[in-house]
Length: 394
Image 1 (spheres, rainbow, N blue to C red):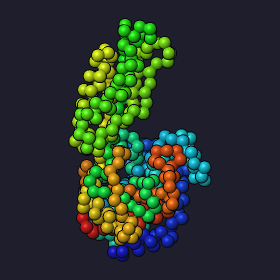
Image 2 (image 1 turned 120 degrees about the vertical axis):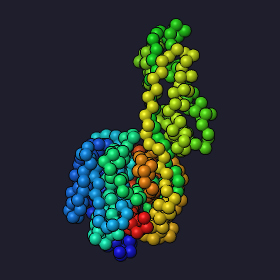
Image 3 (image 1 turned 60 degrees about the vertical axis):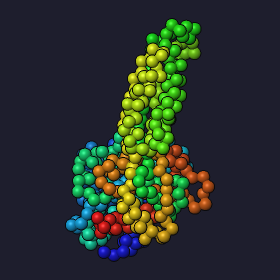
Image 4 (image 1 turned 30 degrees about the vertical axis):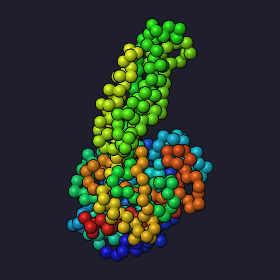
């Protein structure tokens, strides 16, 4: 097998511009989770044109494609293909053409990079010691995530190791952040619906003052949880929506709280639903309100395997230079790549996408988010290098 940098460089020398064009095309035509039909068709077409045999997932979006038929291990390179329900605020030629939908988390970059790596590897497929499985997964942004679709269809059976990259707007282009152990947090969604008889604001003692109860839960639940959970677990409950009532002098019948609960520790994640229910019940009991707690499991933390992380770091240094692999911290962000690593060893790394010298990076999940496109060939080099290393090592 040729050195990994030669495989990637040979392909990039001929296709670097095409890689940018694919990313811009995806960015201009974003699709929400399980609606990624155009993206799926584009991927299937590109892979088929390279002589590969892509398979579309049963629900109609998402693609899996094997490169190589060697007797060695099966190595997964995973990308997520869905966008977010946000308005694109950028004034660029590749601005989203879909109102209210935007690639604000870099999934267009992830998809383009795995496609590029797959096409580069396809040119040496007959020399691969094993199989590199390209997984273009739908609906990462929807809890509990489209990763479960991939797993349910059996695409992790027989897999030895899985790798992924995620854009990091705080990290400069040319750097790849790596961390063994937990690198993301568990992320769940929570909705608390409070109901009562309603009434006049002049007589709150004759009814259930629902807005007061709503405020009690909104402030009390995070505070109490922070005293019940080990601080090192990093539990963080943040509300994104609070709503009740329409008139200033009428106590409403119904109020709603919606938020996300994130936690760094897997044990605390397992305990959280029952704990939340118990605390909410205790907070509303003195008022006589009824509380309906709707706790939706999201994703566990992404826990990087030590051996896979070490291999990834070595591949990054080999393909990008000794200073390219840098340490990174665990974040409170959620990522459904965690479901893959619940079943097989692997590692997710953070891809630097900040332009050198830029002081204020574009943040993820914002309409203004964008990347320095020099990150694309960096990602291809890293993915090709780790794939070739893994088919030899596992």
